[in-house]
Length: 157
Image 1 (cartoon, rainbow, N blue to C red):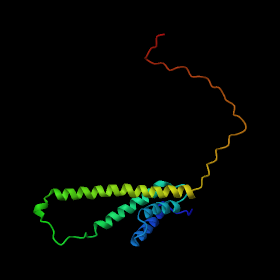
Image 2: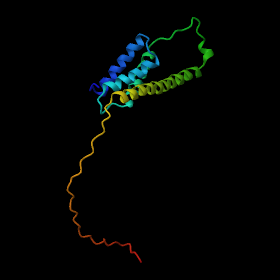
Image 3: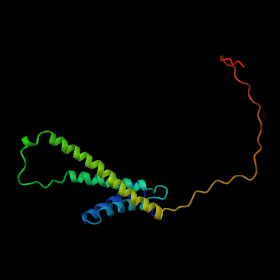
Image 4: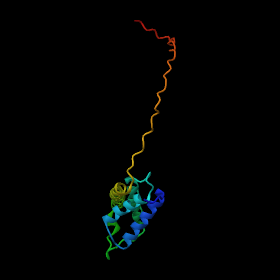
């Protein structure tokens, strides 16, 4: 596995995700691929499924910000604002926030799945060596016990 920092790996995987979205390739597969690439590029000590989930979540947030500034397709005949009312604006704001939360969960989950597969395939599975115990045993020196401290609380036996 390459030894890049987590930040560089996530940025690279997000660029790959934008590239795949630009060419309209992959769909859900591209989300798992983003998490896979993010974990594959990180160091072995930091490579974990959480890195893939973070890459997927950040990609969702990037898509969300881009879509906020993209104008919607409007019908030719717009409804009157008097008919819609004030509640319609609050309903739209609630839908916007709920869409962000659900999108973050789905994108993070799919990125985490890709990251999990990358960590299982490419991460070295060497267990850390246990420290060696010395062959000679140490002598235990018995020390005098200190007398009990005197307190105001009396014990009656």
